[in-house]
Amino acid sequence: MSDNEVDRTIENHMKKIAKLLPNSFETEDLLEDLRSHIYESYNEKVQKSPDDDKMHLITEVLEALGTPEEIAEEYGKVQVNEEEKKSTPDRWIYYTMRLMLAILVVVLASWVVSIVTEGAVDFMFAVVVLLAFAVLEWLVRTQQTKDA
Image (cartoon, rainbow, N blue to C red; front, side):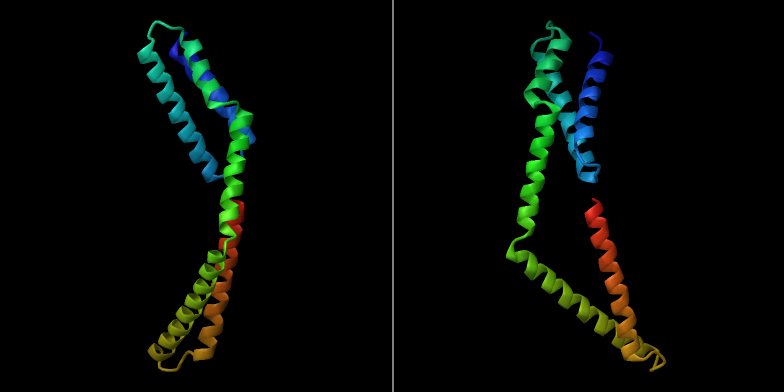
């Protein structure tokens, strides 16, 4: 068996896995890590047993890794565990602190703008505008996080 056939076998396996996983940056990272792991394991087996059939060696590596369904199921368990971690009380403290910091930044920035423009920009107007931008930024980040 040639190296091209081994590459095709690995890529076919990776495509099957990719179809079962959500389309995200995390999935792309996982797939690259899996691909690297497969090639490393395969190369180790070839070095230990250079006379063995390469198809047999790659089959052993893929079987040890697990079926695409098993990999996707395990990935789903990891995702659920990460979501459970995010729902801890520390998360509320984090968001409260972030909100307080955002309000502090808005007030200070509004004050600086009011001072620098020598009153041409009203302090309260600056607060309202900057709060509006902060809310828009929060909405965009929330949407991006949901999409990822």
